[in-house]
Image 1 (cartoon, rainbow, N blue to C red):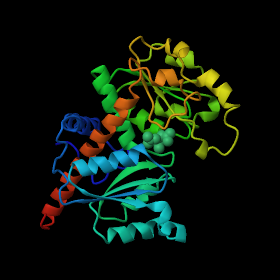
Image 2: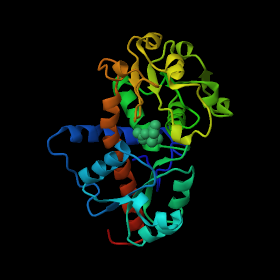
Image 3: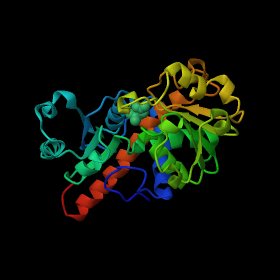
Length: 318
Ligand code: NCD
């Protein structure tokens, strides 16, 4: 087995072989999830706590289901309702939970770097479910699994990531992963939504959708992250859709068999035309959700194996 990490905090520290290990195991969990009996005992006896300091529908549901299917005891902390409101710091909250001996901590936080900080303070294996604009590793892994299953490979593909790149942890984790696996990554969007120093990432940058989509194998659309914008980044939603929204006319520039992806939640009519999102011949958006559960099962399974190994090495009964 090639996966030697205590936590899953980002794609950055992963070796290509480790990415493949996660995806290979996830492929097996896709089969389990498609069968009537979806139960395995890979996480039996372990406690998983989901701490979401930011709203989430699919990511939280996906982690919860993944843990339950693997037999963990899963608890969702409603962080908005917890002591955070009373001014308790992130670290105090983490230490309090740590004293309850969780084995897996799934954390989403609005500040970049907050999850890494928390991981230094606890004994559990920490999974980053999205921190600010920094990373969202399980999203990039589920996107990679979707692409690999649809295209039959995860290398030498041209992937256009389009829209609000500057505020997107999904774009960041994806471009790191796709680069590690030797794909050609293009970022497409208005200059106001491109991060500074983006050229350092070895990507091509476009501010025109037709040029950016030309010959692409994969078209990945991103949500306009209004909650992270503090000024006028776009003229109007109508104008934005006209220039950067994915519709049939712009998609026609990509390869005939190009797939369309979106991590959700979608703003129909802003970054993507509803008919494209619903086109079962092009859109793999529902597959992405399906792959999400399998990838999270695989990631937690691998981290749990390392956890058990480390405990056995310390002579603790497991
Ligand atoms: C993304 C996120 O939260 O980073 N959503 C998700 O995890 N499925 C993208 C977004 O919020 O636009």
